[in-house]
Image (cartoon, rainbow, N blue to C red):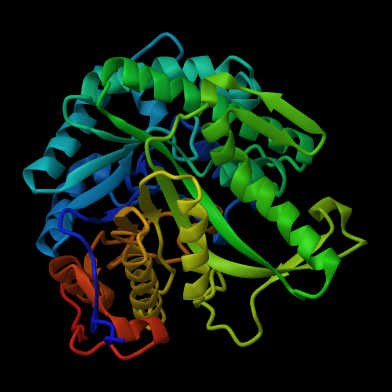
Length: 446
């Protein structure tokens, strides 16, 4: 038997990029539900606010796109802020659409393929006042907005994400109360997820009406949940339940047109076959134990493995096998796979290089096994406002000083550049091997 090659290869044409979201990087967003949420005491860790964020609305996207292009990236995923494009139900902002057009042209001019997300956690205030995604008419409102954006930008964009992480939006906002509107109800959570699936389906058809050749999908957050005790039927049952509701509900409905509620199934034919690719967001693996006295959490408790390497603020564990499990789950849909987010928060940049190297190696392993993976978008290009965690978590390849707006290059940016330019990673990274000959610089540059 011949030895396996030393390197895991990625195909030419593979998309190497980073991902961002409008509210997190633009700054000066004042007309969405998060702008309101941030004003309420206790909603955001340490009382932080997005504020100027990364000042992309003020034009600093240009220098950040330069950084991405100069470090070997060939793609970027960004999002459109609905509240800027449609600040009121009966009003459209042509200047905002032109601003986004200039940003997308800026990507293309730098050799970066744009992937555009149409909904990334934020809603216009006027939509929230109408009930948000609990309102049966919201998928129609969303379709109108999507038609406006696709009509204005479709000549520049071929890759669209309709909705980012509909499961996270619903669970954090309607079950755990961490996102607006701060509700804690399983029934309302699943109702919102169903509404987002309807919105995705409406958007999918709207884009294809305007752009038949466009590629449209969702960015699906996959949380790898394993039974704490594989020999326990109750642990296995609760792990399957959590995974089914959180991971499967939205993308399965977009595959076969069936909404699978705990109390029964609802047919949604409009949603069937509405993903041209499977967008995958993955961060961590957790273990799940049955807890009979915790009905509010669906009778479970989740935790990291005791000996796992944990990121500095406890957001994720470096368990690359969980990423391979996520990719295997994604392959089950029979669609091309685009990794739309993967990364770790680490201001000191000590944890991130290992996480980054080992996770990308798992993607290389999956490609070698025949998985149809077409791209990888690291979260994120630079530090940005991380929702209810504010500025306490730093995911960027570039550090951001929010007071001075100075950018400082982290070592991981050099490591990622070497991967992007070479289209390969050493096989030994699968086992946590050292980074040579992919050594990364230790100096920090503006």
